[in-house]
Length: 512
Image (tube, rainbow, N blue to C red; front, side, top):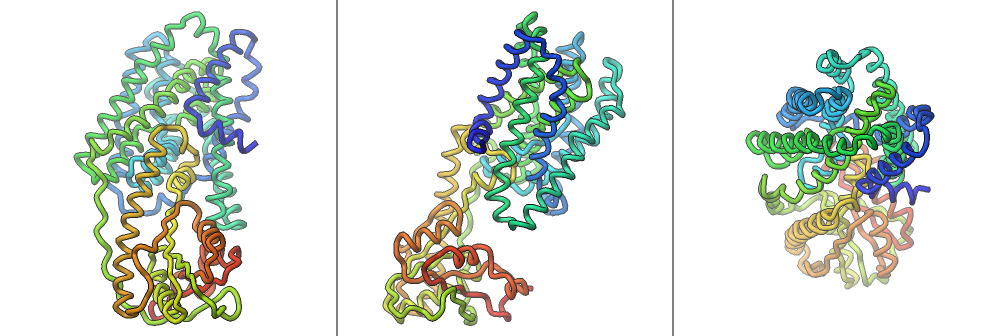
């Protein structure tokens, strides 16, 4: 089941138009009125899984206040009024279509904000915060915007809208947060991100395509009577997205550094269309199907435009700044040694030194050189680059790694940049070590850089290439290091059949 749901999630750009066609055919062929009974369960399927992967704690992290303020100013001070004006201009006699444009511009931002910010190499941390803040503020403000702007054109029961938002946003948000905490407590953050978090977007996608199917089926006969309606909807939607991209690009370029500017663009252009769709079909009954049709078409424009914008990011904001060379590593006091298996096997000819380039790992290289010098062994350096697309998908709550052509190119570029920086840093570190240990058999040529899960790659390299010893540093810091050896080191010790030497920082060097 997860395989097929994941396939749908990775091909959302195709899945949504397909469900629109199927919904249209169904609505023309049958009486679709009974589908209204499925709106609530599909809404829950759509919203709750997104909340499980939402990182609410990011709201309380600082460092990008200007970007956050500018983003929310665009989201709530400009875009809703542009959407309202465009709706009145194009749908003067179709108020529920105008409502659809307004709803499509009222609830920022989607998990796609995080993913696309990462693709464009922007400030992902700022994008995560924009997503949480925008979703919360948008959910609170939407009933009042709808009442204030549309109250003269349609009947708006503000309490009913508030009640529906509570049901489709805040209750799932609380339930999702509790689910997240329970899973993290039971399995740990790393396993949650790599094993559990990727499953929830697939469930959410099932809700999205189900709601799209229902919305189009309920509106099918009206569309059949006026097929030109689809073109009339796409024109104002396109104008709104173009305006939003131009405005946010200009503001970001003038007021913010590159990374924050890119986060601002995607934090103000990407809208949470899933929640907007849920509000349309839940709070406005059958008449809301007209608004739902507008929002469903916005899905197609939003994803396609985001993919194209990535290609022009460097042209708008310039290339990613090069990382300055790392400072030379100062000699560290010696640390105690821990081994996963009893006494060290004396016949050591090949050593795998696994490094994450942290202070601890750089300290561990001295042990690799010292032991290698004593036994005449060869040292190979291994660094594992995390799968960037997998991390972004986990942060975003959706998997888009195969949706766009830029995905593979982005990953290759990210890995190439990482390899260049890693080789430079390892080279500098090895030069420092060689000064202390002249006969250290560590050279820049014996470096392996892999991509993926750190534990899996270290274990597979050690066993498949038959190394005699694995040396690595812990990832714990300060007082925690006394009780927690570090997730990667602990994983390697538990899974690797080869001897593993783990080096920890001495107490006098550790930060508290």
